[in-house]
Image 1 (cartoon, rainbow, N blue to C red):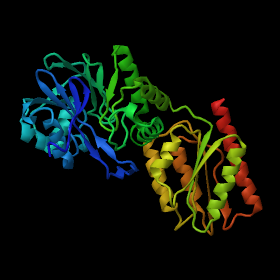
Image 2 (cartoon, rainbow, N blue to C red):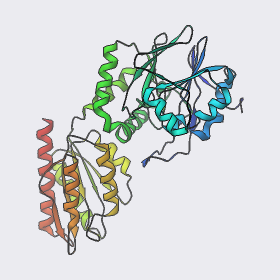
Image 3 (cartoon, one colour):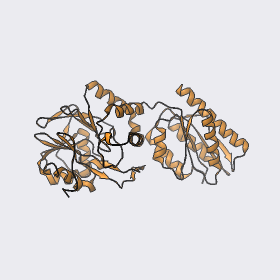
Image 4 (cartoon, one colour):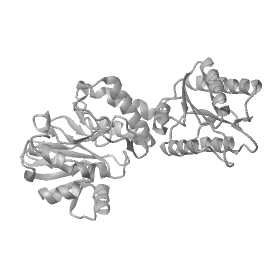
Length: 400
């Protein structure tokens, strides 16, 4: 296996030794249509350090890449920047195989690893603490809740390189390891999807972390995340996007998500979309019978409106809409205008239920919700178009 899996040089003293997961299609309910990577890195000081490990089934691939550079048993330190299982799953087996002198993690990381794997002996490090490898130093920066309590960055001042764990990452399997080898449009799309579906709830922490890094005066030429490509062409570009996404400033874009039983709620959605477009908004419409929740949330990242429609079934929301709203509520998108709508036969509770969840999400509602009995007639469809215009008007005010 050593001859098959090779390390990739990042700098003269840092190598990528991770694993490529071409098959992954779901990550915590988020559709990963392009797979992912689990990135681990080898730092070659006088003492050799391994930064993060990989998901448990990929242990042998990682160790084979390490072996293409150095005997894995020469690794003296392991640094765990993040204890989530896609980065720590193989840690116990790797510790057993190479018997490192020390394993470093944040104080919360040491606790989490102990609880995950029922192991001790993890050395907890503090924010700003430094470990010398001989010729190269590792400086630790706590980034609690970006995006777990244990999360931290590791910075190599001599290389001007930041190991950013899940920050600045994306789910993208590829044979290329660096941003300058990949299509920017693909990377921007996948980075946005990753932010929207993983990082979005922690946007206030992102903003504070960016301020913290700037205040520390760190020179960063390379960002090496735990998923996706290593950033070396234009680090400022992805950092700028994180600042933009963290601010969650609304734009003149509306996301309409609905499901339908016999086409009536679909007809309402189409009429609302016409009104939104007539009001000057870019409109994205998702029929949830065939769309994925994670794609809807990705479009919400820079949207100004979220309009949701559901027919009533068994006195409640349609299952796909309940699923979407449960998922979206947990991700905490902000600064949205919205509305609820739907067709019903004899009860009609779904529209009120959708509106209540949108209120709980702090969405500014344009009315209490629009209902149509059975098949919407011309007057009902005209009201739907007007609802779209009303939502667009509020968005235009918010983005003026």
